[in-house]
Picture 1: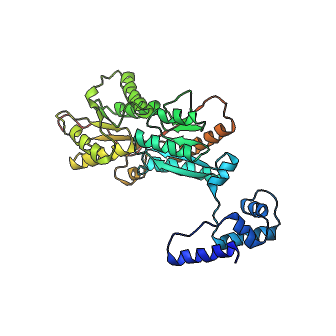
Picture 2 (picture 1 turned 135 degrees about the vertical axis):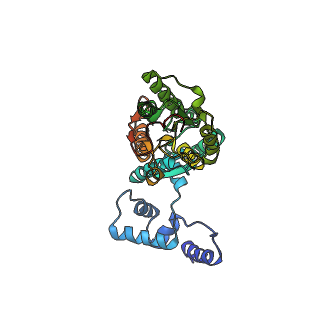
Picture 3 (picture 1 turned 30 degrees about the horizontal axis):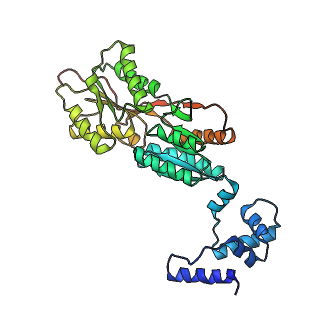
Length: 358
């Protein structure tokens, strides 16, 4: 019996006995079973080079029958290049990051690249572990929503192209795709000031990354533009998840002099404020106006709908992967930052502040 025949028998035994096959079918076995040379089998399976249609179809049918799976790692080692990209985001349970990954995945498939997706949970330690894994797997490039400056520097030292997306640590040294956070935050805060609000709280998760820092700057700039004094005690750091942020929002809204409006710096914080207002029986917008940075599906489903800054997460992902492939093709080109626009979606969650004493 040929080794290919033995392989088929072993594969059958593995199917009967459990999920652990005794060995992996090789391209040599496929070639033997199809009655062609190894190089012909390779061309038929990869589509690289000419093979007669009947031969190609026969080889592929034999490969399917044997359960042959190409050894991507070996192929990458031979080429010294990978057909995969690494993608590292901060929280896949957040619809923003899920949309970002979807935009990257769609464009990667079009270019016949696979996407290796990781979630660091906002942890620099997990981020570093993922970066090491990407290097070990010889990915062609990495798209990252960075939580530290170290990841881009580490990957650059290993000559792996990097695109920072959503936030930026290595401006001028690394490609990036971001939105104009400051301008958008300035616009929504100005909207609340124009309605007559003066006690406008900013509920924010962090103030050191470019996202939080720029949204805080836009919030403060709107007060300066309007000539209105800002009460810094209304800038509240509320954590990273809905439950923690809801507790902080509850404290904020229960103050002796509570805010009449809240600008939530992302969709998670907006949900926390919405829940806290409901618990305290603060009707929106009659007693509390609410705006959010990030527009996600629940904001258009509740009543009233939530006014929000909409940034297209899928478009961010698509722009990031386009920039990554430009970098792969032109490794010595100057670093570029792509700035995408946002739009303000007006719904029913804002109104003039309630009369004093209510």
